[in-house]
Image 1 (tube, rainbow over the protein chains, first blue to last red):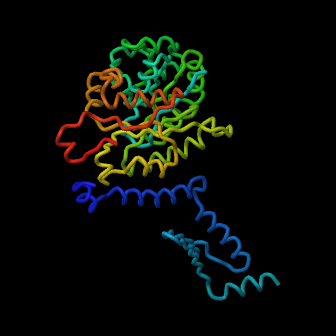
Image 2: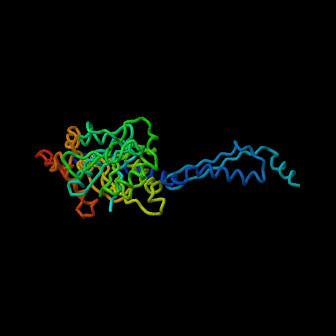
Image 3: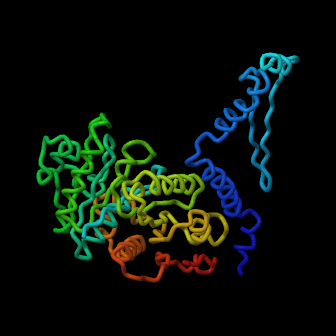
Length: 92
Length: 271
């Protein structure tokens, strides 16, 4: 429409602000009212797996990565060798 | 019936106190009986913005603790007969403000006034939660700037969960008041636009207060901007916002300053 706007269009920062806010707030609203989703997941996963395998609770890592379109939930559990058999033996 | 309205924001320095004073004065100018209550314990400033700083004898904490009666603590504005101030205390003890105390003071104010405007402190701590606790309506003051919009979103979440109305399953009626808006910069993509902010916060708009020298000039002399220069752009915007609070339908616009020839040539339009 006018020269000034054309010139400014090149470094308009408002669209960046808008996009950053939309992504951030979508994330923060998801956390609201459920303050520790990861803590809850970690505790329940630990409980289920411990029924069958002897675990060191400190070796259970639950991590969530939020991407633009897809989020990933990563669960990393370190199982000591022979632990499975130990539980099986105790059960019999 | 009396209405309790909290003026809040989360972020500091966005214009809560200025807006409380201006909206309170505008409502009083429209004939409503108004009290503005300063909840910023320890850092009171509403008295200063209203030009009543030398008339404070008793304060909100004194009333809550039963040291003074409400009638002793209320200060009547010297310019507007139906505008009153209940100042905050300068005490450092923020725990002096209790939920029960606030409830009883608000209940008493409801019997005496049409509007009870609660000026919230910044933050999301006790002072801010108590200021919004008994509110029927909320004005969320927001600057067109990322940190302010984020904090407003947080405050909206609290209004929907931590107020008495929310706990009863009712809703606090929420309004966004955008302050320090520069329509020229927004048009050039340098500042979040009104549409951007409303879309992100998904809350209806009460008014748009343009960035203006009149706001500072008014606080310098201790007068709400709607009283100090009623014809100025921010004063007209606050007056329109107050009338919307009273239920009137007024076309939304950004009141503009008189533009000089150079600005017109450069295409800096008002809205």
